[in-house]
Length: 168
Image (cartoon, rainbow, N blue to C red; front, side, top):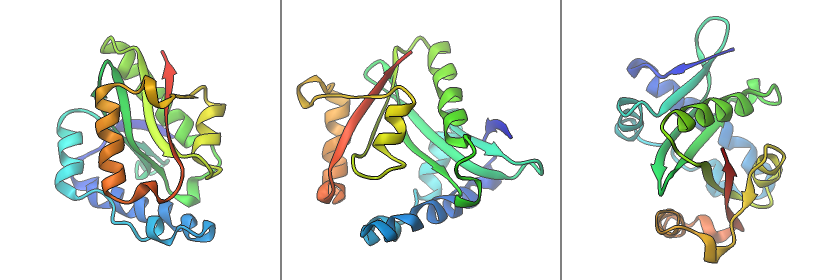
């Protein structure tokens, strides 16, 4: 597995990874998440052009997972990390997050942050095993409050969610 920047021609494949990665949510009674559309190509291109869209590539150099992030209040905020189910449970997400942490350190950022579902096994419990800790509501930065407001507007608060932070 190799971590590298996404190529422009790969962005539709990232959408396919997102759709496949969302399918297991249906089994948890979250069909709206399973059916949610992936980020639009222009959104993925903005992350890619900013140098914040990385893929995990297989031995044929094809993407099997991706991560997009952006700086938010002195941290690198993980906007999305998705692993194709065929590549799940092999440490791919962990390697992508480690790559993002290395890039954040290079930029002088103090932490990684993300928002996630608390009761989905491959969400908050997984991130906790990787060293992320829940941020109490009063400790959210202005940027993270904006992220949470946007998520609520998109209906994600139908299920319990949390902001998490991993110091670098």
